[in-house]
Image (cartoon, rainbow, N blue to C red):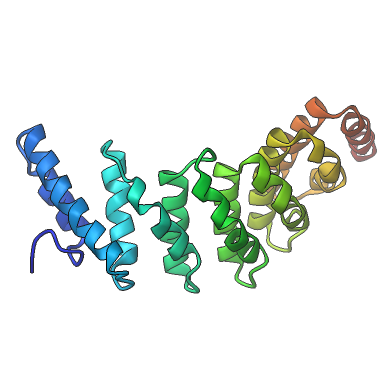
Length: 223
């Protein structure tokens, strides 16, 4: 097997890079690996897509350009399986930020995953949205996040609260939609949800006087 083929395992690539004795040698290894990944992308090689993206994330952390792999993140996120989605969302959070125009293409996949029957996939979508959410995405997906603040699983409620914090910071006009759900989190028994709920309420109070009055009354009733 070609040591720089798309079938090379991630740990083998890392071992090759770490064995380099000079910066020029490292650049040569990365250049060959990127060429193999580009060829695999052009061939639409689905079997190695997740492995290619894992390699690109490592290459990105070394400081090399990996913009050519951005669309691979979106393809993996659109996959039905959890392992593929997990790599896709991790790549999305690492390789892209809210300034990338390609990010708007993932909004529909995020909306579907926020309504998924698998709570672990819902959690992946919330983590991604909480990290890279733009103002446009916040407006489109705020209703889904607001609904998840009342989800049965506490880990999802916690992630939804953290995601809500980013949404109201990006679009303060949406703050009024989160006042009642945020105040309800103050009655939580789960410490993780309670802590994130307190932070959400704090940020809401900074943005909205209506939220400040409502949450002040809610905390008075709890005392």
